[in-house]
Image 1 (cartoon, helix red, strand yellow):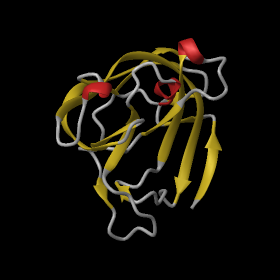
Image 2 (cartoon, one colour):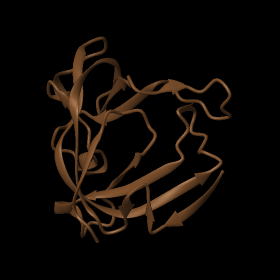
Image 3 (cartoon, one colour):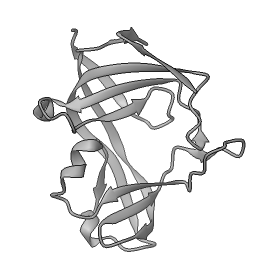
Image 4 (cartoon, one colour):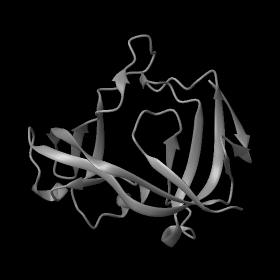
Length: 155
């Protein structure tokens, strides 16, 4: 899988200020550990043609104050520390201002074990964490998650 760093693509430019959000969606807790909650991810499918395995889940910190929350825009309800295997929960993105720090195109689309295979990726960081080199996350533009993206300010 090859990738190319870009400065603009799909209507976005590195440096843009965005507002992202996603309405809360029904999900189920697939498993828990003392530090993590794994949620069955409702918007992706396992890729049967992939050379990589993905179990259909996404993991989140159990501790609502954990630093790792700066590496995902998604939030769980109820509080992840209260969730147990089999529980119903909601997963969504509260309105969050982010800065575009990078854009990447995969050619061919990336093989991470799930469908759809990502082709364009926005690298984002919450505006209140922009000086933290370890903070940030990616959004796959063709990922299937119902994420609303609004450009608040062009770079």
